[in-house]
Image (cartoon, rainbow, N blue to C red; front, side):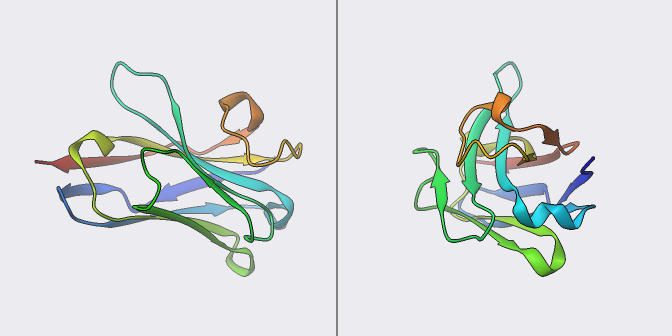
Length: 125
């Protein structure tokens, strides 16, 4: 069982930046693909970014490509999401997720079996 805890959310003006962190409870985190998803009110949870176990491969949603960067520090059991040039449309609860079953850099929620509780990101115009 992997316990994930997100942090770093908050209120920011459009054009600003935030860095989200997701800390994992188990060393086995180091072998998992990790992903970030988000869910805005009234909308389905959507894929944002994913990173493989080594950090050498990443995958991004088109809506965030060039603005967001996913990274990981396996020594700290932590994955990050650096968000720059934030837009009001980025407002959502952001969740990190772990894939222990090796689906690859998945974009679907069912490909991840562990989830954090989420952190709110609000971008004001």
